[in-house]
View (cartoon, rainbow, N blue to C red):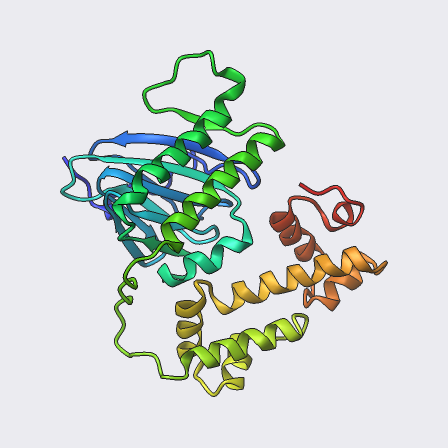
Amino acid sequence: MPVRADDLPVTAAAADPSPPLGVVVTGRYDQPPGYGVNRPQGSDSWLFTYTLGGCGLLRQGAARARAGAGDLVVLAPGTAHRYTVAPGAERWRFWWTHCQARPSWTPWLAPYAVSDGLYAVTSVPGTLHGRIDAAFGRMLADARAPAEDTPCAPDPVAVAHGSLARELALCALEEIVLLAAGGPRAQPPAPDRTQAPAPDADARVRRAEELIAADPGAPHTVRSLAGSVALSPSRFAHLFTLRTGRSPMRALREARLGHAARLLEATDLTVERVARASGFTSPFHFSRVFRERYGVPPGAYRTGERR
């Protein structure tokens, strides 16, 4: 009997924790009604799903997306999410991959943002379905290469061990994202909203992005950025997320981390001074989020110990 997403268990962490940051895990599932995963704390990694048949329902925070055959739905890390066989569906057959997404993928996914961190790429041309399915198959095969003589399980899952396997997997996933999100098609339907964007909404968002890029270490806030483009904080946050696929504070943190990485590469400033110059008031917090983003602490990044 199908279950509603609201009826999912309180947490999936004990039985189904998300993979740690930096690991690439791929699988192919064929799940009946009743299957579901709920992660109130979200995941450290990105989750990419591509539906082969049936229908799934995915939620990120308060937003939701139904995934039918040929749909690529992506959940970014850091926000509570849950996914299940859609109510009324007989099954959900889908590929899935947990990994750390490459920064270059975000602009491709941004036009399909349903909310901050949830992307639904629908209406993928049928001529591309076979290529996308094959690319996922290559990811699984490359990850299983050390044990290629062992028989495949009905629902195979594999972890890409070693830098070569990880890079091959990420290259295949990049092909998938580019094919699905970058291929020619009609414009995706605009998300439901009660107020249409102003004609100059794009210009205002670009101006805010320019302010962040010009001085990532400045004490920017949603309120200060909104004031700089003559918008209310709530309206600004909505437009920024709609146009870029990420919240203003997430964009600011990414800009600050990128600025910090450049300072570590090009200067001999201490880690504490790099943190302050990049807008982080706490060196401990800076080290933690830097390691989450780049896979190593700031000091190790400077000495070249990078993933």
